[in-house]
Image 1 (tube, rainbow, N blue to C red):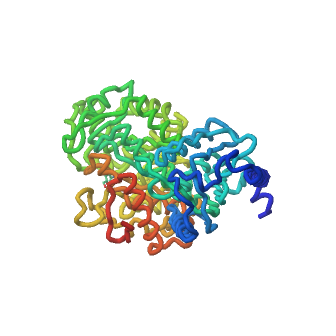
Image 2 (image 1 turned 30 degrees about the vertical axis):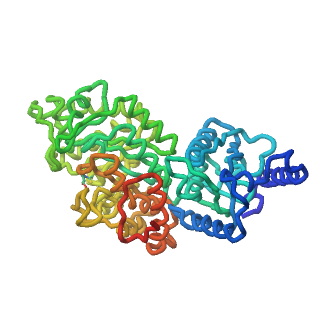
Image 3 (image 1 turned 180 degrees about the horizontal axis):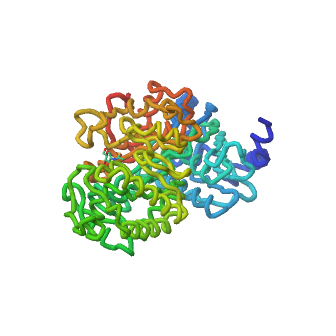
Amino acid sequence: MRKDARHPNWIWRFAFLVLCQLILIACQTPDATKPPLKDQSPMKKTNPSEEQESEAAAQAGAAMNNLIPKPAEVKPGGDLFTLTAAANIYVDPATDELTAIGQTLADRLNHSTGFHLRVLPAAGILEKGSILLTTSAADADLGDEGYELDISKDAVLLVAPQPAGIFYGTQTLRQLLPPAVEASASRPGPWQFATGTVRDHPRFGWRGTMLDVARHFFQVEDVKHFIDLMAHYKLNRLHLHLSDDQGWRIMIHSWPDLARIGGSKAVNDDPGGYYTQAEYAEIVAYAASRYITVIPEIDMPGHTNAALASYPQLNCDGKAPDLYTGIEVGFSSLCVGKEITYQMIDDVLREIAALTPGPYLHIGGDEASATGPEEYRLFIERVQSIVAAHGKQTIGWEDFARVDLLPGSIAQVWHAQQLEAIRQKGQKVIFSLAPKAYLDMKYDASTPLGLNWAGYIEVEDGYTWDPGDLLSGIAESNILGVEAALWSETLRTPEDIEYMLFPRLPGIAEIGWSPAKGRDWEEYRLRLAAQGLRWEAMGLNFYRSPQVPWEF
Ligand code: TNX
C-alpha cells in the first residue's frame, strides 16, 4: 500500500501540531504554562520510578494483546499514553454523529476517572495528551466498519472511513484502559493505555444476538443494557423475537388486543408486558446510537397462540384458545385459509416496518408442525410478498427454505436440516447453530438456568466452530455472518441474561469479527480470562467457567 494512503495528510499535520505544542511547553517557564504531563496525574504522586513505569507499560501492553474480538492487526508500541484531566476529545469533522460518539466515550471515561473531558471540534492546535476521532482522509480499504487506532505517547488518533468504524475504535480503546474504567464509581488513576497501532475491520457484516422477549418480557431499560453489552464486543444486529405462543410484545394500533391480551402473561404465569410503539422506537434509536440494527421478528404461522388467544377470528374454528404459559412448541397455527389472517399480518408488518429503519423483517416460520405442508408453502410465499410490499427483506428460520423463496430472503440456520435446500436456492444465510450458538443451553449439567435439548455448551464449545467449516457447498459470499440466540423460557431477569451471555457471547462476537486464520482456543481463553476483570468491574453476573484461567 502506498505510504500516503496509509498515513494521510492529517497525520503529518497533527504530528506537526503536536511538535509545535511540545516546543511551546519546553520554551515556557514552568509556572507560566500547564505543568508537564506527569504532574497532571490526579494522584499527585511523585514521578514513578523507571521500574514502575516499565511494569505499567507491560501491564497496559498486555491489554493490547487481550482484545476481544481480536483485531485484524495489532502492533504494540511498548510505551504508555497517559490520559489526564487536561485531555480533550476532538472530532473532525464536528458532525452531530461524531460528536455523539465522542460524547459516549467521554461519558464512560468521565464516569470512571472523575475527569470532565469535553468533546470539541478539531480546530487549530491539538494539545498533547488529547484524543482525535476523525473520518477525514481515512483509508477507504478499511470499509464501512473498519478503523485504525494509532496511540503514541502524545496522542490517540482514531481514524475510520465511516462513523461506525469510529464507534468500534472507541470500544477497542475502552478495552485498552484498565478494567476499572468499567466501574460505576470513579477511582484515582493513573489512566494509561499501551501505545501501538490497531488496524481492524470485521470478517462478517452480520454479527447478531437474538433476544426472546416473548417467553419472558424484558423492560426497555433491560434491553438497553443488553444493547450496551453487545456494543462492547462490536456486535451489530439485535434480533428481537417479539411474539410467540406465550406472549405478543409490541402494541399494534390496528389490532390492539394482540398486545393487551396476548401480551398479558409469560412462561410460568410470570408477569407479561409489551412495548408501546414509542418504547420500541426508543429501543431502535438506542441501538442505532451503538451502530446496531434492530430486526423485529413476528413468528408465524406457528408459535402464534398469543395472537390466536387475542382474536377469535384468526382461528379456523372462530374460537380463541386460552393463553398459554407452558414451554411446548409446534401446537399452534394461524388459519392459513382465511383472508383476515393476511389482513392482520399486513397491518402488523406495516406498523412495525414504519418503526424500523433497518431493511429486514423476520417472519419466523419455524416448527410449524400444526400447519399442513401445502398450507405452509402458500403462507410463506404470500407473507414474503407482504414484507416486500412494505419495502423490507424477509428473514426466516431455515425451516422456510423448504418452499420457494424470494431471491433476497435470508435463511437463519439453527438445526442445519435445510442446508442443501438453501444451497440449491442460493439464499444468503446467518449461522445460529443450536449446539454452538444457542446461549439458552446450559453450560453443563449443574447450570441452574437454561435448557439442554441441543446439548451443553461450555465456553470452549461455543467458541470452537466457524461458519466456514459448515459451508456444505454454501459459498462464503452467501454467508452473512453469525448470530447468538437467547431464548428465554427459563430466564426472567437481567442477571439471568448476563449469566447465559457471559462468557459465551464474546466468543460468538469474535467468530463474527476476527479473521478465521489463527483463531485458537488455548490463546483465546487467556484473553477471555483478562476480560473477567472487566465484567467484575461492571458488576456482571457471569459464569466462572472452570475452562478459563480467571485472573481473580
Ligand atoms: C427452538 S430455534 C426454538 C424456540 C425455542 C428454543 C429453545 C427455533 C427457531 N425455535 O422456539 O425457544 O428452541 O432453545
